[in-house]
View 1 (cartoon, helix red, strand yellow):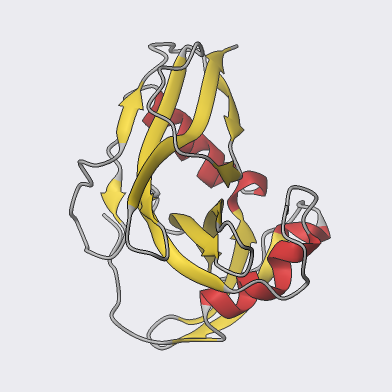
View 2 (cartoon, rainbow, N blue to C red):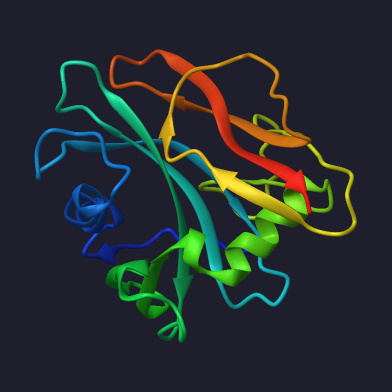
Length: 192
């Protein structure tokens, strides 16, 4: 199980994302300086214990209508080889673990493998900020497939309670800047 350290990171995740997010093709903001706030998320465990995996929701409070983004993150003790340059969000000094290479999780094979196991019902989502604590607010409707899945991550989140037509999907919640809660589909999966 992943251990959550109560420590500092410099620069912070929000600072790194504030610079990185506007450069992404799926960014819908109108400024190069979003006003990001943490709004929710959950973690997955790497069975090898080497990669930190977090599905972070940030809300850009700058637009008239706030926008919620899902950013899967991987935290590594060394650079990840064989990924495109834009996959690296940045590096940060962790108060306990030292330098962390932080990647956009869609480019990290460990993140995508563990998301697949979650969607197949083979792993348990973990609380974002508490060690060894399942997160019961994350709802998984698994594919039931043992042959792998093709996964699509919804980067811009929209509130939705509607059932999906995909074979598997993942729903979770976040909090808007005004304090209201929302839930939506984070990822959908189809068996290969």
